[in-house]
Every structure is written in structure tokens, then in C-alpha cells.
Image 1 (cartoon, rainbow, N blue to C red):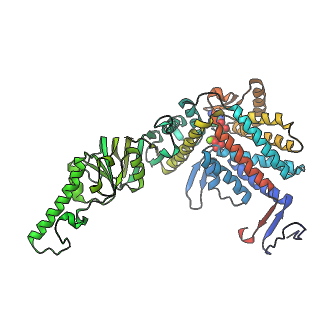
Image 2: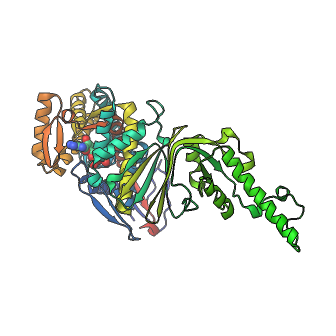
Image 3: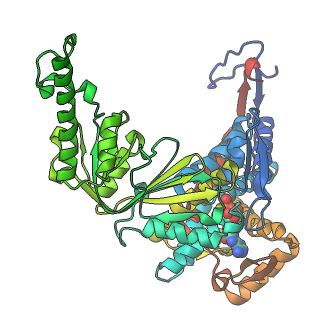
Length: 535
Ligand code: ADP
Ligand code: MG
């Protein structure tokens, strides 16, 4: 334990004998090294030719992914500075759904540059100020890069595909999935798209190519949600739908309905027994009558319908599905039905409508779809894949792509393949001169840091990163734009916009912002106190 003498103006820190304190340059160096190390661990996954990583957690669950945020969150990162990089990726993923690797890699490189600056006696506070200045310039450069084109479905598909390439979409192909994603976001008309109207439903046991977008609700369940009788229809077109909370059970029906006074009364005579049977029949018939009178084709019902009721409904060709609890809200939203507590309360305007209600059976699983509901609103991406791992990864990928497409609709696109980063670096270098004092050095360092992204894309695609960067800069100066274009197995320096490689501007803005935030936070820490127990 060194340097424990309190100096004037500094808080007196009383530490237990076991805790360890690292200060100043040492603390910074350690933090920066930890942050850099974590960022570097995902660098090889950047871009369409990035490598997948297989992660085995202590519970021996296996996750195979190319997604930066997933890799980082599955890694057992303990160091607080390294943990900040993990948080950058997680925030990026939560808020915008893509650009997680970009953000983490950039944060690491900003730290590496900060380390050099600190070595050269630039104070961390100056670096922080310079980096903030640089993000302002970078944001403007991104705005200028926004492609002046209408955001049509083709463009959205390109962005969705680019956000998914190299992410374990397998032979489904990013293009096919991109179409489903754009479909999902666009459903319900140009303006009524909302993220919360889209559900992802995963179901393993079939090829990923069977993944599709369905207008409505899809429910997958093993042996639940089955039609409760085999003689009920498996599909209904143009369905009238009732959503009931009641569990119709003749034997639990209120006594007044049974029309005799003492239901629990001991049955002593044949007359009494017959009376009970009669009463039950009447209640059963009332239940069926209400539904047939209202022309109901499908009943979503809470569990527990009595078998006699079910048999009577089957005879009328009515499909009963239960239990509905988990999905009741979505079914109501898409069909326009109102959930009623009891059959006696069912009115005509409580009923919903859908073009199609169907039940498919796959092995032990039942899949229910409610499609083309009159209220619209819900859209489901029904994700298939051979195994649980595959569908889980596809779900992550599709989920991110939906966020990106939603963000892109509003924020526009910039050329991908590192082109926007090169433009940012160029803008930073040309504006650095007008930044006063040592902050200028930090702005230039930021430019160098941003170029890690095209460099990593080139390296991951099999190009020599140094040659590629030189080539990129020359082409950029000559053509006004340049980037790495990966097409199948070939990687070249070219014009990504021409090749149809675009990134969401919102993703780029957010990545720069969150990377800067993490890097500056880490660089500023110059005092780390580690308690014995946490070492
Ligand atoms: P992130 O987690 O940051 O989104 P990705 O692994 O998805 O990381 O890689 C994104 C980068 O890959 C972006 O810079 C994007 O422009 C680039 N990219 C995507 N498709 C291509 C392509 N066909 N050619 C070149 N670059 C591409
Ligand atoms: Mg991506």
C-alpha cells in the first residue's frame, strides 16, 4: 500500500488493510489495457466475413454467435473498465439493434489512442474534451453522408440484409430474411408500423428457409393450445372469434341456472338424479346456443372446458383453443375481439374476425396462426431453424434487423463497408487544424481510431489491412467515396453505395456516441480501489 498520506484538499480515504489502491498513471494503464483487450476480442467478428465465436458458459450452455453484444455479455468480464465496454455493446443493441461490434471496437481503439496521448503528456481531461469535439464533427460528417434517396423497401431490404450478413443466418440467407423483416415492419400500411406490433416466434425442427412473416399472431406450444378435440376443424376461413375467460364446466355452474334449489343436496331418488341431468343439459345447451346464434367459429378459451361442452361444440363445427392466457392480448389486438368474463356477457360487438385461423401439428408441437385479423396491428415473424441454437441465433439477428429497419426509416442510410468511417476520418483531419491547443491532438487521434473499422473489415475479408487502407484513402480522394465491398468470397476496394452496401445512419451515430462515452469514462478514472474480497 503506497501513498496513503492525505494531502490538503483531497478527501481522506480510509481503506481496510486488505484493499488495494491503484492510482494515477498505473490505474489508467490498467483500465485502458482491460478495455482494449475486451474490444479486441470481438474485432475479428466485424463485417460480413467475420468469424463466429462459440461460447460455452459455466452451465455448459453453448451459444454460437457473431453478434458483438452477445459475445461480450456471455463473456465473464469482471474488470470494471472492461465491463464498461460490454455495456457499450449492450446499450447499442438495446437502443438500436445493430452496430454493436462497431461500437465496441471503436471504444477499444479510442482507448488505445488515449493511451498514446497520455504517454505524450496530454492530460486525460484534454483528451475527453477533444474526443467530444470530435464526436460533434463526426456527427456532422454522418449527416453529410446520408444518401439522398427515398427510403423505399428495396433500400430497407439492403440495410436489413447488410445488418444480418455474417451473423449465422445460415443457408436461409440474409436476403430472404431481410424481406421478411421489411415485410414485418411495413405491415399495416406505411404509417402504422410500430415496433411493438411485431412478434418473433421461434420454433425449431425445420429448415431456416421455412421462416416466414405472417400477418397476425402465431402461437407455438407443445401439446397445449391443441384443439381440444380431434373432431374439431383444423382451419377456419373468415372466422368469427370469441375470446372467453370462462371455464365452462357444467358441474360448477351456479345453482340458479340449474333451476333447482339445492345442487349439493344428496341424490336419493331417480327423479332427483334426472333433474340434475336435465339442468346440466340445459346449461350446456345454453352455452352452445349463445355461440351458434352468434355464428362463432373459433373460441379462445381459458383452460378447463368440460368434455361434454367440448363435444357439443365439436358437433357444431366450432374450434376451441385453450389455454389462451399468454397470447390473449395479441389475439384481441389482431382480431378486434373483446375478452369477456363469461358467456352470458357475450355481445355481438365482443366478437372478432380473422381471415384465417389454423392449427398445424409438427411432431408434438401445435402451431396456431390467426391471420388477417380485422384490427390488423399484429405481425409475427415465425422463425424456423433446425435446432434450438439456430433459432435462438436467428431470433437475435432478426430482432436486431427489425430495430435497424425501424431506425433507418426515420434516419436514412450512409454508404457501408467502412465508407462513412473514412469520410468521418477525413472530416476530422481537415477540421482538426481549427481546434485550439492540445485538444487538436485528440481530434486527430479520433480520426486514426475511426479508421480501425475499415481496416478490420479489410483484414476480416482477407485483405492486407495496411495496403487496403492506403488503397481506400487514395480511392476516397479520387472518387469522393470508398469502402470495402464484400461480394460472396471476393473482397475489393470500391464504392459500397454502388454495390448496394449501406448502413443505417442512426446506427453509426449511436455507435460513435456510445464508444466515445465509454472510452472517455475509462480514460478519466485515475483511482481504482479494489477491495480484497472482489479480487
Ligand atoms: P456490427 O455488430 O457493428 O453491426 P457487423 O459484423 O454487422 O458488426 O459488421 C458491420 C459492418 O460490416 C458495417 O461496417 C457494414 O457496412 C459492413 N458490411 C456489411 N455488409 C458488407 C459487404 N457486403 N461488404 C462490405 N462491408 C459490409
Ligand atoms: Mg451488424
